Amino acid sequence: MIIALFGFILLFITILQAFMPKFLKPTEAFGVYIPDSHTKDSVVIKLKNTYTTVVLTFGMIIFGVYLWWALTQNPAEETLALVSV
Image (cartoon, rainbow, N blue to C red):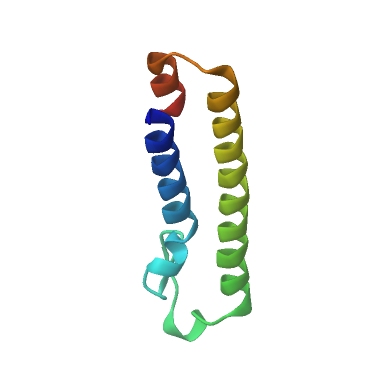
Protein backbone atom coordinates (compact mmCIF):
# COMPACT_ATOMS: atom_id res chain seq x y z
CA MET A 1 0.00 0.00 0.00
CA ILE A 2 2.78 2.41 0.87
CA ILE A 3 4.47 1.70 -2.48
CA ALA A 4 1.31 2.80 -4.29
CA LEU A 5 1.02 5.94 -2.16
CA PHE A 6 4.61 7.07 -2.67
CA GLY A 7 4.46 6.03 -6.33
CA PHE A 8 1.36 8.16 -6.87
CA ILE A 9 2.99 11.14 -5.16
CA LEU A 10 6.13 10.78 -7.30
CA LEU A 11 4.07 10.49 -10.47
CA PHE A 12 1.86 13.47 -9.56
CA ILE A 13 4.83 15.72 -8.78
CA THR A 14 6.59 14.69 -11.99
CA ILE A 15 3.56 15.47 -14.15
CA LEU A 16 2.90 18.74 -12.36
CA GLN A 17 6.52 19.82 -12.73
CA ALA A 18 6.68 18.79 -16.39
CA PHE A 19 3.63 20.79 -17.45
CA MET A 20 4.28 23.83 -15.25
CA PRO A 21 5.44 26.05 -18.16
CA LYS A 22 2.13 25.35 -19.91
CA PHE A 23 0.10 26.21 -16.78
CA LEU A 24 1.69 29.63 -16.30
CA LYS A 25 0.79 32.86 -18.04
CA PRO A 26 2.00 33.05 -21.64
CA THR A 27 4.09 36.10 -20.76
CA GLU A 28 6.13 34.14 -18.22
CA ALA A 29 8.53 31.32 -19.01
CA PHE A 30 10.95 29.82 -16.49
CA GLY A 31 10.53 32.80 -14.17
CA VAL A 32 11.34 35.37 -16.86
CA TYR A 33 8.93 37.93 -18.31
CA ILE A 34 8.41 37.63 -22.06
CA PRO A 35 6.86 40.57 -23.95
CA ASP A 36 3.47 39.89 -25.56
CA SER A 37 4.99 40.19 -29.01
CA HIS A 38 7.32 37.23 -28.35
CA THR A 39 5.05 34.78 -26.51
CA LYS A 40 4.37 32.79 -29.70
CA ASP A 41 8.01 32.83 -30.78
CA SER A 42 9.21 29.43 -31.98
CA VAL A 43 12.25 29.50 -29.67
CA VAL A 44 10.11 29.98 -26.56
CA ILE A 45 7.67 27.26 -27.62
CA LYS A 46 10.55 24.89 -28.41
CA LEU A 47 12.17 25.53 -25.00
CA LYS A 48 8.89 24.82 -23.19
CA ASN A 49 8.33 21.61 -25.17
CA THR A 50 11.91 20.46 -24.62
CA TYR A 51 11.60 21.10 -20.89
CA THR A 52 8.37 19.11 -20.71
CA THR A 53 9.89 16.21 -22.64
CA VAL A 54 13.06 16.07 -20.54
CA VAL A 55 11.25 16.27 -17.21
CA LEU A 56 8.70 13.62 -18.24
CA THR A 57 11.38 11.30 -19.58
CA PHE A 58 13.60 11.45 -16.52
CA GLY A 59 10.60 11.39 -14.19
CA MET A 60 9.25 8.22 -15.78
CA ILE A 61 12.70 6.62 -15.63
CA ILE A 62 13.00 7.46 -11.94
CA PHE A 63 9.43 6.25 -11.35
CA GLY A 64 10.17 2.95 -13.11
CA VAL A 65 13.42 2.41 -11.19
CA TYR A 66 11.63 3.22 -7.93
CA LEU A 67 8.84 0.73 -8.63
CA TRP A 68 11.30 -1.94 -9.76
CA TRP A 69 13.42 -1.47 -6.65
CA ALA A 70 10.45 -1.38 -4.28
CA LEU A 71 8.80 -4.47 -5.74
CA THR A 72 11.91 -6.63 -6.16
CA GLN A 73 13.85 -5.76 -3.00
CA ASN A 74 10.89 -5.74 -0.59
CA PRO A 75 12.44 -3.05 1.65
CA ALA A 76 11.35 -2.22 5.17
CA GLU A 77 8.72 0.50 5.47
CA GLU A 78 11.19 2.96 6.98
CA THR A 79 13.69 2.40 4.16
CA LEU A 80 10.96 2.78 1.57
CA ALA A 81 9.85 6.08 3.10
CA LEU A 82 13.42 7.43 3.22
CA VAL A 83 14.16 6.48 -0.40
CA SER A 84 10.83 7.91 -1.55
CA VAL A 85 11.55 11.27 -0.01
